[in-house]
Length: 337
Ligand code: AHG
Ligand code: MN
Ligand code: MN
Image (cartoon, rainbow, N blue to C red):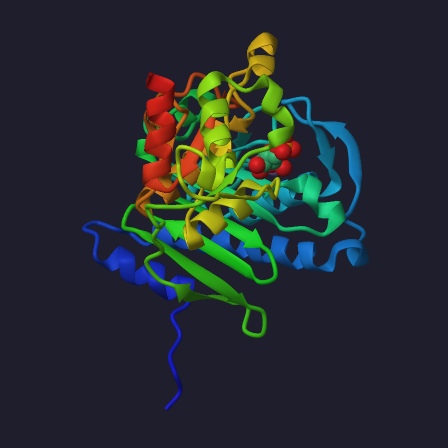
Protein backbone atom coordinates (compact mmCIF):
# COMPACT_ATOMS: atom_id res chain seq x y z
CA UNK A 1 0.00 0.00 0.00
CA UNK A 2 1.13 3.55 -0.67
CA UNK A 3 2.61 5.28 2.35
CA UNK A 4 0.36 8.28 3.04
CA UNK A 5 2.02 11.63 3.63
CA UNK A 6 0.25 14.56 5.27
CA UNK A 7 0.31 17.77 3.26
CA UNK A 8 0.17 21.14 5.01
CA UNK A 9 -3.33 21.66 3.60
CA UNK A 10 -4.61 18.40 5.06
CA UNK A 11 -2.89 19.20 8.34
CA UNK A 12 -4.53 22.62 8.63
CA UNK A 13 -7.98 21.36 7.66
CA UNK A 14 -7.77 18.64 10.29
CA UNK A 15 -6.59 21.17 12.91
CA UNK A 16 -9.48 23.49 12.03
CA UNK A 17 -12.05 20.70 12.37
CA UNK A 18 -11.15 20.51 16.06
CA UNK A 19 -12.16 24.16 16.52
CA UNK A 20 -15.75 25.26 17.08
CA UNK A 21 -17.08 27.67 14.52
CA UNK A 22 -14.21 27.46 12.04
CA UNK A 23 -15.48 28.47 8.61
CA UNK A 24 -12.61 27.34 6.42
CA UNK A 25 -11.63 30.95 5.82
CA UNK A 26 -8.40 30.61 7.75
CA UNK A 27 -7.46 27.35 6.00
CA UNK A 28 -7.96 29.04 2.69
CA UNK A 29 -5.86 32.05 3.71
CA UNK A 30 -3.04 29.81 4.85
CA UNK A 31 -3.22 28.02 1.53
CA UNK A 32 -2.55 31.29 -0.26
CA UNK A 33 0.30 32.14 2.10
CA UNK A 34 1.95 28.77 1.45
CA UNK A 35 1.48 29.28 -2.29
CA UNK A 36 3.34 32.60 -2.02
CA UNK A 37 6.18 30.79 -0.21
CA UNK A 38 6.34 28.19 -3.00
CA UNK A 39 6.58 30.93 -5.63
CA UNK A 40 9.38 32.63 -3.65
CA UNK A 41 11.15 29.30 -3.18
CA UNK A 42 11.13 28.82 -6.95
CA UNK A 43 12.54 32.31 -7.56
CA UNK A 44 15.21 31.89 -4.87
CA UNK A 45 16.22 28.54 -6.37
CA UNK A 46 16.62 29.94 -9.86
CA UNK A 47 18.62 32.97 -8.71
CA UNK A 48 20.45 34.73 -11.49
CA UNK A 49 18.91 32.40 -14.09
CA UNK A 50 15.83 34.57 -13.69
CA UNK A 51 17.86 37.75 -13.05
CA UNK A 52 16.79 38.38 -9.44
CA UNK A 53 20.14 39.05 -7.74
CA UNK A 54 21.55 42.47 -6.88
CA UNK A 55 20.34 45.77 -5.52
CA UNK A 56 17.11 47.46 -6.49
CA UNK A 57 18.56 50.95 -6.09
CA UNK A 58 15.99 51.99 -3.47
CA UNK A 59 15.61 52.11 0.32
CA UNK A 60 12.83 50.90 2.62
CA UNK A 61 11.30 52.94 5.46
CA UNK A 62 14.07 51.76 7.81
CA UNK A 63 16.65 53.29 5.48
CA UNK A 64 17.93 49.86 4.44
CA UNK A 65 19.05 49.26 0.88
CA UNK A 66 16.48 47.12 -0.90
CA UNK A 67 17.53 44.13 -2.94
CA UNK A 68 15.67 43.34 -6.16
CA UNK A 69 14.35 40.27 -4.40
CA UNK A 70 12.97 42.30 -1.45
CA UNK A 71 10.66 44.03 -3.90
CA UNK A 72 9.82 41.01 -6.05
CA UNK A 73 8.97 38.81 -3.07
CA UNK A 74 6.89 41.59 -1.53
CA UNK A 75 4.86 41.75 -4.77
CA UNK A 76 4.46 37.98 -4.78
CA UNK A 77 2.96 38.12 -1.29
CA UNK A 78 0.58 40.94 -2.19
CA UNK A 79 -0.62 39.39 -5.43
CA UNK A 80 -1.11 35.94 -3.96
CA UNK A 81 -3.06 37.15 -0.96
CA UNK A 82 -5.10 40.14 -2.14
CA UNK A 83 -7.81 38.49 -4.23
CA UNK A 84 -9.42 35.68 -2.21
CA UNK A 85 -11.38 37.79 0.27
CA UNK A 86 -9.83 36.59 3.54
CA UNK A 87 -7.89 39.74 4.36
CA UNK A 88 -8.82 43.23 5.50
CA UNK A 89 -5.30 44.55 4.79
CA UNK A 90 -1.62 43.63 4.76
CA UNK A 91 1.55 45.20 6.16
CA UNK A 92 5.15 44.49 5.25
CA UNK A 93 8.66 45.49 6.20
CA UNK A 94 9.13 46.70 2.62
CA UNK A 95 6.11 49.06 2.48
CA UNK A 96 5.84 52.41 4.28
CA UNK A 97 2.08 52.15 4.88
CA UNK A 98 -0.45 49.36 5.18
CA UNK A 99 -1.60 47.75 1.93
CA UNK A 100 -5.28 48.09 1.15
CA UNK A 101 -7.15 45.35 -0.68
CA UNK A 102 -7.73 46.68 -4.22
CA UNK A 103 -11.25 47.90 -5.04
CA UNK A 104 -13.41 45.20 -6.53
CA UNK A 105 -11.97 42.47 -4.30
CA UNK A 106 -13.92 41.36 -1.24
CA UNK A 107 -12.43 42.05 2.20
CA UNK A 108 -12.14 39.54 5.02
CA UNK A 109 -11.58 39.38 8.74
CA UNK A 110 -7.83 38.73 8.93
CA UNK A 111 -4.71 40.89 8.80
CA UNK A 112 -1.45 39.61 7.35
CA UNK A 113 2.01 40.98 8.20
CA UNK A 114 5.21 39.71 6.62
CA UNK A 115 8.93 40.01 6.03
CA UNK A 116 8.90 38.68 2.47
CA UNK A 117 12.64 38.01 2.30
CA UNK A 118 14.53 37.71 5.55
CA UNK A 119 18.30 37.79 5.38
CA UNK A 120 18.18 39.35 1.94
CA UNK A 121 21.89 40.28 2.12
CA UNK A 122 22.45 36.50 1.83
CA UNK A 123 20.72 36.33 -1.55
CA UNK A 124 23.67 37.44 -3.69
CA UNK A 125 26.10 35.12 -1.88
CA UNK A 126 23.78 32.10 -2.19
CA UNK A 127 23.25 31.50 1.53
CA UNK A 128 19.92 30.65 3.23
CA UNK A 129 17.11 33.20 3.23
CA UNK A 130 13.52 32.98 4.45
CA UNK A 131 10.06 34.49 4.71
CA UNK A 132 8.30 35.33 8.00
CA UNK A 133 4.56 35.95 8.41
CA UNK A 134 1.94 36.52 11.06
CA UNK A 135 -1.86 36.45 10.96
CA UNK A 136 -4.00 38.62 13.22
CA UNK A 137 -7.75 39.03 13.53
CA UNK A 138 -9.06 42.38 12.33
CA UNK A 139 -11.02 43.89 15.19
CA UNK A 140 -13.28 46.84 14.47
CA UNK A 141 -14.16 48.32 11.09
CA UNK A 142 -12.48 45.85 8.77
CA UNK A 143 -14.02 47.43 5.68
CA UNK A 144 -11.86 50.50 6.32
CA UNK A 145 -8.69 49.19 7.92
CA UNK A 146 -6.01 51.57 9.23
CA UNK A 147 -2.53 51.00 10.66
CA UNK A 148 -3.95 51.01 14.23
CA UNK A 149 -5.78 47.74 13.49
CA UNK A 150 -2.38 46.07 13.23
CA UNK A 151 -1.10 47.35 16.57
CA UNK A 152 -1.94 44.22 18.57
CA UNK A 153 0.34 42.45 21.02
CA UNK A 154 2.02 39.25 19.83
CA UNK A 155 -0.19 37.23 22.18
CA UNK A 156 -3.10 38.06 19.84
CA UNK A 157 -1.58 36.25 16.84
CA UNK A 158 -3.79 33.58 15.26
CA UNK A 159 -0.93 32.01 13.38
CA UNK A 160 2.75 32.60 12.71
CA UNK A 161 5.16 30.87 10.41
CA UNK A 162 8.27 31.01 8.36
CA UNK A 163 9.58 29.47 5.19
CA UNK A 164 13.26 28.64 5.06
CA UNK A 165 14.86 28.47 1.63
CA UNK A 166 17.89 26.36 2.47
CA UNK A 167 19.23 23.06 1.06
CA UNK A 168 15.55 22.12 1.16
CA UNK A 169 12.59 24.49 1.45
CA UNK A 170 10.71 24.15 4.73
CA UNK A 171 7.60 25.70 6.20
CA UNK A 172 7.30 25.91 9.98
CA UNK A 173 3.97 26.90 11.50
CA UNK A 174 2.10 27.47 14.71
CA UNK A 175 -1.54 28.20 15.36
CA UNK A 176 -1.00 28.07 19.11
CA UNK A 177 -1.08 24.29 19.40
CA UNK A 178 2.59 23.48 19.07
CA UNK A 179 4.94 23.84 16.13
CA UNK A 180 5.02 21.68 13.03
CA UNK A 181 7.50 21.59 10.17
CA UNK A 182 6.85 20.70 6.53
CA UNK A 183 9.31 20.08 3.71
CA UNK A 184 8.56 21.13 0.14
CA UNK A 185 8.46 18.16 -2.22
CA UNK A 186 9.19 19.90 -5.52
CA UNK A 187 7.97 16.93 -7.55
CA UNK A 188 4.40 17.23 -6.29
CA UNK A 189 4.55 20.92 -5.33
CA UNK A 190 3.35 20.28 -1.77
CA UNK A 191 4.70 20.95 1.71
CA UNK A 192 4.71 17.55 3.45
CA UNK A 193 4.68 17.10 7.24
CA UNK A 194 8.20 15.95 8.12
CA UNK A 195 8.82 17.55 11.53
CA UNK A 196 5.76 17.05 13.77
CA UNK A 197 5.80 18.72 17.21
CA UNK A 198 9.09 20.55 17.07
CA UNK A 199 10.53 21.35 20.49
CA UNK A 200 13.58 23.35 21.57
CA UNK A 201 15.97 21.58 23.93
CA UNK A 202 16.11 23.50 27.25
CA UNK A 203 19.86 23.29 27.63
CA UNK A 204 22.27 24.45 24.99
CA UNK A 205 25.91 25.19 24.34
CA UNK A 206 25.47 27.36 21.25
CA UNK A 207 24.84 31.07 20.85
CA UNK A 208 24.32 33.45 17.92
CA UNK A 209 25.07 37.16 17.95
CA UNK A 210 26.74 39.59 15.55
CA UNK A 211 30.00 39.99 17.48
CA UNK A 212 31.13 42.91 15.32
CA UNK A 213 28.86 45.03 17.56
CA UNK A 214 30.59 43.84 20.76
CA UNK A 215 32.09 47.22 21.67
CA UNK A 216 28.58 48.72 21.73
CA UNK A 217 26.87 46.00 23.82
CA UNK A 218 25.25 46.65 27.17
CA UNK A 219 26.81 45.09 30.27
CA UNK A 220 24.43 42.07 30.63
CA UNK A 221 25.03 40.96 27.03
CA UNK A 222 28.79 41.44 27.38
CA UNK A 223 28.74 39.36 30.54
CA UNK A 224 26.74 36.51 28.99
CA UNK A 225 28.89 36.24 25.86
CA UNK A 226 32.09 36.65 27.84
CA UNK A 227 31.12 33.76 30.13
CA UNK A 228 30.35 31.59 27.08
CA UNK A 229 33.70 32.45 25.54
CA UNK A 230 35.58 31.48 28.71
CA UNK A 231 34.32 27.94 28.08
CA UNK A 232 35.46 25.09 30.36
CA UNK A 233 37.75 27.44 32.25
CA UNK A 234 35.00 29.99 33.00
CA UNK A 235 31.96 30.13 35.32
CA UNK A 236 29.85 28.01 32.93
CA UNK A 237 32.34 25.16 33.07
CA UNK A 238 31.63 24.16 29.47
CA UNK A 239 32.74 25.08 25.99
CA UNK A 240 30.27 26.96 23.79
CA UNK A 241 29.92 27.09 20.03
CA UNK A 242 28.98 30.17 18.00
CA UNK A 243 27.01 30.77 14.76
CA UNK A 244 25.85 33.82 12.80
CA UNK A 245 23.97 33.29 9.53
CA UNK A 246 22.58 36.86 9.25
CA UNK A 247 19.15 35.40 8.52
CA UNK A 248 16.87 35.20 11.55
CA UNK A 249 14.85 32.45 9.88
CA UNK A 250 17.93 30.24 9.55
CA UNK A 251 18.97 30.99 13.16
CA UNK A 252 15.53 30.22 14.58
CA UNK A 253 15.33 27.04 12.53
CA UNK A 254 18.67 25.87 13.90
CA UNK A 255 17.47 26.63 17.43
CA UNK A 256 14.24 24.70 16.81
CA UNK A 257 16.33 21.79 15.61
CA UNK A 258 19.17 21.57 18.12
CA UNK A 259 18.68 24.36 20.64
CA UNK A 260 20.67 27.51 21.20
CA UNK A 261 20.14 31.17 21.80
CA UNK A 262 19.85 34.06 19.32
CA UNK A 263 20.41 37.68 20.28
CA UNK A 264 20.01 40.97 18.48
CA UNK A 265 20.10 43.17 21.58
CA UNK A 266 19.82 46.91 21.94
CA UNK A 267 23.26 48.52 22.23
CA UNK A 268 24.80 51.91 22.99
CA UNK A 269 25.11 52.81 19.32
CA UNK A 270 21.38 52.22 18.76
CA UNK A 271 20.51 54.18 21.88
CA UNK A 272 22.58 57.12 20.62
CA UNK A 273 20.62 57.00 17.36
CA UNK A 274 17.30 56.70 19.17
CA UNK A 275 16.44 53.21 17.83
CA UNK A 276 15.27 50.44 20.12
CA UNK A 277 16.66 47.50 18.21
CA UNK A 278 17.35 46.14 14.77
CA UNK A 279 14.58 43.61 14.28
CA UNK A 280 11.01 44.56 13.57
CA UNK A 281 8.32 43.71 16.10
CA UNK A 282 5.43 43.09 13.68
CA UNK A 283 7.28 41.24 10.92
CA UNK A 284 10.09 39.41 12.70
CA UNK A 285 10.10 39.48 16.50
CA UNK A 286 6.43 38.66 17.21
CA UNK A 287 5.97 35.79 14.75
CA UNK A 288 9.30 34.22 15.75
CA UNK A 289 8.50 34.65 19.46
CA UNK A 290 5.17 32.87 18.98
CA UNK A 291 6.90 29.94 17.26
CA UNK A 292 9.73 29.77 19.81
CA UNK A 293 7.36 29.88 22.81
CA UNK A 294 5.11 27.24 21.24
CA UNK A 295 8.18 25.03 20.84
CA UNK A 296 8.94 25.35 24.56
CA UNK A 297 11.52 28.13 24.29
CA UNK A 298 11.43 31.73 25.50
CA UNK A 299 11.64 35.14 23.87
CA UNK A 300 12.33 38.50 25.47
CA UNK A 301 13.89 41.90 24.89
CA UNK A 302 16.11 41.10 27.87
CA UNK A 303 13.68 43.10 30.02
CA UNK A 304 10.18 42.02 28.96
CA UNK A 305 8.39 39.24 27.11
CA UNK A 306 8.25 40.30 23.46
CA UNK A 307 4.73 38.96 22.87
CA UNK A 308 3.36 41.24 25.61
CA UNK A 309 4.65 44.47 24.09
CA UNK A 310 1.83 46.80 23.07
CA UNK A 311 3.00 48.02 19.63
CA UNK A 312 3.09 51.78 19.20
CA UNK A 313 3.76 51.82 15.49
CA UNK A 314 3.83 49.51 12.49
CA UNK A 315 7.57 49.55 11.88
CA UNK A 316 8.61 49.47 15.54
CA UNK A 317 11.92 47.77 16.30
CA UNK A 318 12.76 45.77 19.41
CA UNK A 319 15.74 44.04 21.01
CA UNK A 320 15.46 40.25 20.65
CA UNK A 321 16.80 37.44 22.85
CA UNK A 322 15.23 34.07 22.07
CA UNK A 323 15.81 30.33 22.18
CA UNK A 324 16.43 27.65 24.77
CA UNK A 325 14.57 28.48 27.96
CA UNK A 326 17.35 28.19 30.52
CA UNK A 327 19.75 30.39 28.56
CA UNK A 328 17.12 33.06 27.88
CA UNK A 329 16.23 33.07 31.58
CA UNK A 330 19.89 33.48 32.47
CA UNK A 331 20.27 36.44 30.09
CA UNK A 332 17.09 37.98 31.52
CA UNK A 333 18.42 37.60 35.05
CA UNK A 334 21.66 39.39 34.03
CA UNK A 335 19.48 42.27 32.77
CA UNK A 336 17.57 42.37 36.05
CA UNK A 337 20.65 42.41 38.29
P1 AHG B 1 16.20 41.53 6.50
O1 AHG B 1 17.04 40.86 5.46
O2 AHG B 1 14.75 41.15 6.41
O3 AHG B 1 16.42 43.01 6.60
O4 AHG B 1 16.59 40.92 7.93
C1 AHG B 1 17.90 40.75 8.33
C2 AHG B 1 17.90 40.70 9.83
C3 AHG B 1 17.88 39.34 10.46
O5 AHG B 1 17.31 38.31 9.74
C4 AHG B 1 19.32 39.04 10.77
O6 AHG B 1 19.39 38.27 11.92
C5 AHG B 1 19.91 40.40 10.95
O7 AHG B 1 19.07 41.30 10.28
C6 AHG B 1 21.30 40.49 10.41
O8 AHG B 1 21.82 41.70 10.78
P2 AHG B 1 23.38 42.07 10.63
O9 AHG B 1 23.60 42.30 9.16
O10 AHG B 1 23.52 43.30 11.46
O11 AHG B 1 24.18 40.91 11.15
MN1 MN C 1 14.20 40.20 8.17
MN1 MN D 1 13.37 41.37 4.78
